[in-house]
Structures are given as C-alpha cells and as structure tokens.
Amino acid sequence: MKKYVMFALCNLLCCGVPTFAQEWPARAVTWIVPFAAGGPTDQVSRYMASKLSLKIGQPVVIENVVGAGGAIGMEKLAKSSPDGYTIATSANTLQGIAPHLSKLPYDTVKSFTAIGGLAAFSYAIVVPIDSPIKTIDALIRKARAEPGKVTAGSAGVGTGVHLGAVLLGQNAGVTFNTIHYKGGGPIMNDMIGGHLDFTLEVIGTALPMVNANRIKIIATTGKQRHVTFPTVPTVSETLSGYEMNGWFAIFTSAGVPENIVLKLNQAINDVARSTDYQNFVAGKGYDIMITTPAELAQLVKTEVLKWGEVIRAIPDSVNKN
Image (cartoon, rainbow, N blue to C red; front, side, top):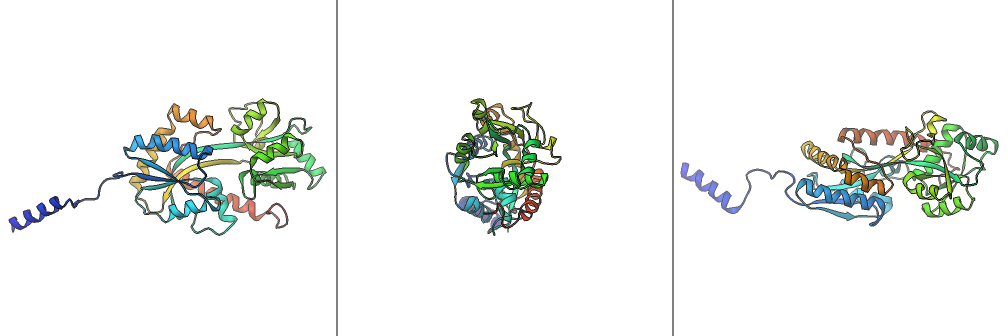
C-alpha cells in the first residue's frame, strides 16, 4: 500500500499537476479601460497599472475596450472569470448614472466587486469672463427672473456636466435652457465667445483658461472649497446639500475572493499614497481617491440612488434629449 501511495505521488509530481491552487497572482492581470486610448483617464490607468505591476510582481496589461459609452468594456468585465485576473476602470457616470438612462447588460451594483479608487475630481461652475454673473445667488436670481432663458452648456445627455446643471436647477427651484454639445471643447468655445451663461468644467481643465482670463469661476461643486481655488465658495454655501463630484475607480467581476480583492486594494492604495502618483494625477487635473472596497461599494449604491432621483425628476420635455 505504501509503495502504491508513493508511486501515485511521484506521478503527480512528474506530470506537473499541482496539488493546491496557485496563490494569486500567478500570471498577468488584464486591465480593461472602457475609454479611448490617450485620454487623461487612460493615461492615469496606465500609470497606475505600471506601478501596480511592480507591487504584485506580475504584468498588468491595459486593454482599451470602447463603445456604448463604456458599457461594452464593463460587460466584458462582468462576464470575466471571478479569479482576480481581470479588472477595469469605471466611473461615477457608468456606475451611478448610466443605469437610469438605458438598459444595460449587467447590474452596476451586483455584477462587480469594488476594489479601490483611481482618481477623483470636482467641477467649477464657470461663466464668460465679462459676465455680470459673479455668484451662484446671482445666477439663480437671473434664472428666476427669466424662466428657461439662462443657458447651460452640456457635454451630452447624462454626462456629469449635464446632470450637475440639472441638480443645481432642481436644488434652486429653477429651470435652465440646457444646450447639448459633443464634448467640452465646443462648450468652451461658446463660453469664451459669450454665447452661454454658464457650464460646469473639471477644475483641472478650467485652470489654464481661468489663469488666461478667458473664463471665471463663481463656485466649485465639492463638499469643501477646492485647494486650487480656496477663495472661491462652494455651491453648497448658497444651496445647502449640493454636491457634484466625479471619480474613476477600479472594479473586478462579482464573486472574486475577498483575499484577492484586499491584496489588490492594498497595492493600489500604496501606489496612490506615493508622491510620484499624486503628482502625475494632479498633472491631469484630478485629485487622489483612496478607499477601501467597502467604501467604494457603498459609494456606488449612493450614486445609483442619488442620480436615479435626479433623472426621474427631469420633465420628459426638458433636457433629456
């Protein structure tokens, strides 16, 4: 009997069949970026991936999977094996807003496991440089005096720029005339030309135009004043409870073992705390976002509820198309 057991063990060893599953990570990790290559979010994802690779001792390979506003890439993540070898960058717009705009082939809460933050940002509410509007209160008073005539530039239905303006109107009890553009560039052209009353712009992107005296900021949209513009008030100082922040974070598929998720989270947060990463992110106009998996998962649930209420309150004839 002993000879048989020894023979069987030798067979296993000679054939290279492992008796236990290999500890994660034993091979390369694929990182799906559902945005086009070359943009700021893609660049931050690639930078984090290069540092993450050093942390875990395995290659982390970026794969841009674009289309359907990011849904194709996220669907690929949802269908991936729950083994921790496929992760993805997602955003507040994809996780919290998109479910209320169209039917998705996955559930933004149940189909994914939250890992950790990648970057965050708040917006500046900007007006033309020669605009008489200098405060949020003045903007609201103008909107009340001229119902539906105050123009708000939008980067497209369901974008943070669009819904940030909608939320502002809902909180103030006014309606803006939202004009949808294909991206932020055309908005800024019309803003600088004085053809729009206001828009929202990512603070890091707005900074060069503010410094060049081409636009001016009347408020920022975070909970606290932004470090870049400490003298500019937040919207919430006028409208209590208003907050509009964007973020990019890292997810994997549902069912990935907790020990793998925690390893990924620790490695990502270690990179995020480094001076090199913080400087790189700041150069793209973003802020650092460090979370636990549980905190990120709760943030997604909060965003889904918040934007569901905002979108359902938009009249069908106003600002939805």
